[in-house]
Length: 163
Image 1 (cartoon, one colour):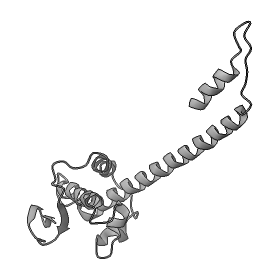
Image 2 (cartoon, rainbow, N blue to C red):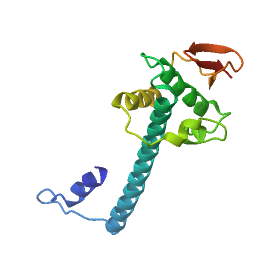
Image 3 (cartoon, one colour):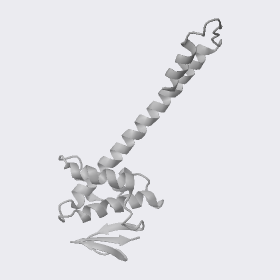
Image 4 (cartoon, rainbow, N blue to C red):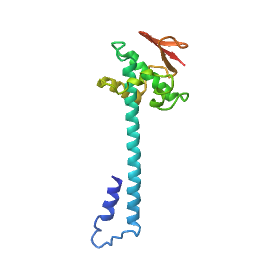
């Protein structure tokens, strides 16, 4: 957009009686702007692809860990919260992928991408990824079939615990 504006200014005819001068380095300036625009576009695309992968992985763990364990999908929501709390904690890896594939964590990763997930799962994952989970304390970083330290909530057979 900026590039088009600059081109328009330089290529616009001069007012009657005025001389229009094009700087000597005009071509070089335009080439630099194109190069910078391409780099910024590539970075934006890479960031978008990374975010899409992270949301897809969050959806996979939400679904495979316990999407079907309760009608309201609370356990699934809390699972997403635990993963994102770990990502944001500084004590765990800083990506969803690294948290999920860390040794001894989330054995359900072996089922990832084996079936089509409902749109609601992706909606939940996107919401958790982008907006967080303000109703879940940020230090709830464990999910297990038995209490691990102090329990925050229990949904069916899943314990969500403080770290």
